[in-house]
Image 1 (tube, rainbow, N blue to C red):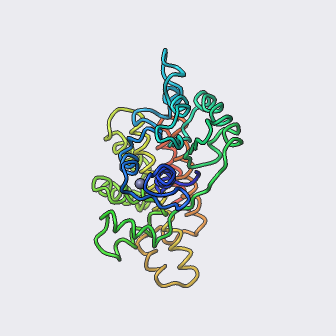
Image 2: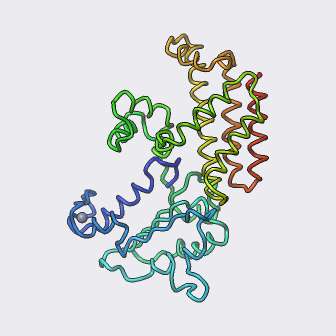
Length: 319
Ligand SMILES: [Zn+2]
C-alpha cells in the first residue's frame, strides 16, 4: 500500500484483516460485524492471526529481529515465523508491515523468502510512502495499491469526528491546509507545535529573512524533544512540513491572485513582502523544503541540514 502518511493505509489494511477473520459475517460481504470476539481482538491488536510490526519509536527503522527473531531465537520467532504457524481461527494468517520504507537491505532480504513463497492463504501488507523506497526485489514480489491523499470534504468529516475542530467551518479550513493527511492535522492541532509554528512563520516572513535566527529557532525546537536522534528526526520532519505548507499556501494564493481571484489576493496579503514573489520562487521554496525533509533520513548532521535549508530560503525570499 503506497501513499502519503496519515491517509488511512494502515486503517484500511486492518479493515481487510477484520473482514477476512470476522466470525460474524462472510468475508465476501466485506462488512465485518464489529461485534464478535474476533473483531474486538483485532481492534485491541490481540488477535493471534493478525501479526503487525512497525518501526519502534527509538529506532530509525524496522529491525531484522522483528521479522526473523533475535540471536538464538532466530527463525523461531518474528513475523516470518509467526506467519507460518497454523491459523488459530482456522482461516488465515495476516501480516501488516508498517513503515516498510524503513526496512534496510538485510531486513528486506529476510522477508524475501516469505514474500516469494507465502504460507498458503496468508495475506501480507507492506505499508509504504514511496515505491522508490522499496528494493526492486521487494517491489517485484508485491502487487501495488496506490492511495491518494484524502479529499477536503472527507478530511473535514474526520476532523469533526475526532473532535479536532469545533465547527464545520474551522474543520474545512483545517482540512484545506492539511494536504489530505490526518497526521498533518494532528500536528497542526497540537498545542505545543501551534506556538512554534507561529514562531516559524514569523521568521519566514521577516525581511530580510535572518537565516541564522531561523536555523537557531528550528534547532532549538528539535532539541526540545530530547537527546535521542530518532524523535529529533521526527520533529524536524514536522517542522519542514510546516514550512512546506507555508509556501504551498503562498503559491496557491499567488496563482489564484494571478488568475484574478479576490480571495486569492486576500490570502496573499498575509504573506507581507513575500506577496510580491513570483510563483516560481514559491515553487523553489517548496522544493527546498521537500529536499530537506528527504535528507533527514540520510543521516546528514541535522545542524548543517537546517542551516543550509534556512540559508537557501533566505536567498529565495529575496528573489
Ligand atoms: Zn466480527
